Length: 471
Image (tube, rainbow, N blue to C red; front, side, top):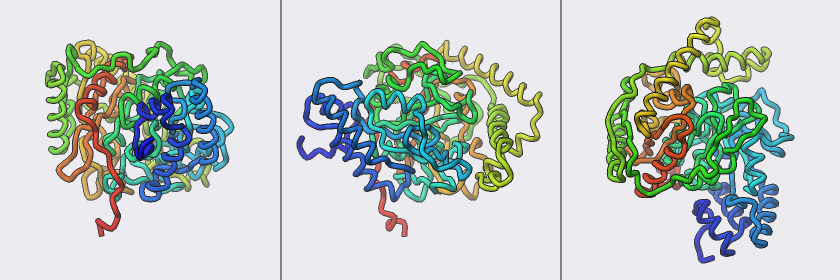
């Protein structure tokens, strides 16, 4: 190797170096650990780092590559896991004082599949308690901060994974998304985040809101996300909602042009309020999609805000947490989570079944809409990152995180694939994300469009700012 810092490279490049014998997984793992040492104290992305286990796995991978027998193309790549995911030999506190701090005995499906593929599991990344909100702070590990401006939130709930991706503290990062928890922090930190079709990336134990939750990657490139999906996107019987039919190669449609693709562009879904800086950046990005060959039509999919439908389902999940907690544990829970659970106590069984019916109508409408268009493009989040340790922008009129995420949770209700692609910056230098979605099981179309865009318009990544600059 020359003087290239392995910690700055993407997974595709590292794999090529491993294959050519120009670098080893042990060197790449140590470079990732060095970046954790360099950055994590300032941003608090990782909650647990298994240095000894990572180096042991990297040495085994180096031997396999040396023998020309890697287990998979991601053999030896450094990976992080969200702290809602169980990993054998690591804690899974789920950001909660109510969860014991012992080590897990068993790998959840994404961890097991990654381990079997030879990936090096570095550690766990931060999340709000049980992933209940769209920012990342909790009473166990504290607050994760945005690397573009450490006064601000990176979003959530996969905020730790997004920050780790933005700073390349490892190259593949596992997140989960029940209402935008991959796409929101991807947008706020300027990385790629992808929520696959529900059931194509299995999980176990079940999420708190099991029919809303999707497992997916946060990475710097679409190619790296595809490499991760080719491993974790495989059927696992332990997930009762898992489905079959995943593509043999999730990236088999990746091309550099978008000729022939029809795109519906909705700047606000017909009901959302969008910051003008965000709207301008996304509209510019849509113009670039046309330059790449896509045919774009500005049109709304034709549904009203499903906020109340989502809230009934989401608050009921919080209520279930409360119902299974004793009085002492309730005092340890995030007050916002408790408040959500109490709000669900006002809902009747009829309200819940009406929400399920409304969800079915929305899903049918969106599936019909995506029969007419290959893709639907919107902003990912309508606002810029705001001050950390707040659930909503301070000194504003909003009270709940769902109010500032109108573009994300509809696609959890419909269980359709959706991604966030970095598409520029606000005038104050904060990342903006463009959401690209499609119908169920059309994941390769989404990945193709995201790849073409990011190949033509590469993302720019942060270095952690010096806190003194804000003094």
